[in-house]
Image 1 (cartoon, one colour):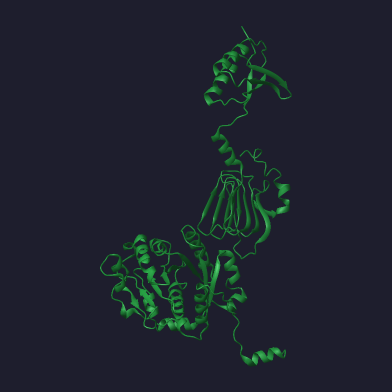
Image 2 (cartoon, chains in turn purple, orange):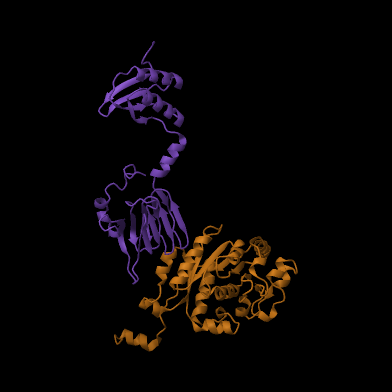
Length: 223
Length: 264
């Protein structure tokens, strides 16, 4: 055995052991060394480790190989595989899912606006118009049409409008509609699903912080 | 080179044809060369309102299908030399016309006229697409009713997808007392909902119906309220800035005197 541990660096941290893989050598070299290393390991409890590939981009099959080598030949368990790099496609998808989509226009009767993630409309949503977002719907204008937030079952989504007088509000699979008598809209309100009653309720915008403290934390919401 | 303006509304019966006839007449009164095109194939009305029904020999379908020259189908107005009408066909249906056909026709007319007004059929189907095809600008007509404002909103949404300038709005059949009591949408409400530029308002006036009945557009008469509304609109199209007409009824001298003395 020569030059052992040349390409592997292990570090103990508060979160457990992190194994740093060299990102310059050949993948096969790395895999061989990893194999040797884990086979020589004598610890028998199922220790969780984190693998960090630094600046090497690993494809799915390569990740599978690493998992196979570590978990078949030893009692170690991989908690996660981390990396400093993302593929262009992954970065785009991530960007797409986590940014608020902004539209500066009036959504008119008969128009349907579908959005992945959060929708911010700077303009009015007129009667008969529909906005459907997988995330939240924010309307910086008058909401008089239909707003559907959390369209793929995200029940903690909200609809926020600077003037709220909608035909309907839909959140996840719940629907509420305007009363049959004529109502004046109200300013600066938001709609959410009250966990206790299970119904869509309206509240003053000042209470949004209390009711949905993690609203803008996209990672927390699992988007 | 003339300008082609399509007059549309989505909903039927809000006064597209009457507006086309009267705005056309008002523009002709200002010595502009105007051609009115009726694209409501199968349900032609514009000729009736203008009182030109008896003079029709060929129609728009004849021109498109090559049965006659474009000049031969144009009907000259009985009041103005500078106002012409290209009538719709009454017997054919809308599907015999294509947007390309209309566009070609309008391009042929443009050099000879200052304004070409296109009267659009109701609806958002083929007939609407044909009418919009050759236009440079659009005027949306609505009434102060919820249903017609909703349809106007829909049409504006569709017009935004065309390569046109942002449409202008005419609010037709305004009844002052119903707006005051809140039984009709107000002008400001409509303009803020539709968020387009207001070109003019037209008061609900029996004279409009009377004039149409006799085949004489109301804009031709100098003294009715509706006529002044239409003339103001034509002046705004020509680029003048004309303030919106006051809706207040003319109460007569005695009322004004009484008001002055604090008796009313």
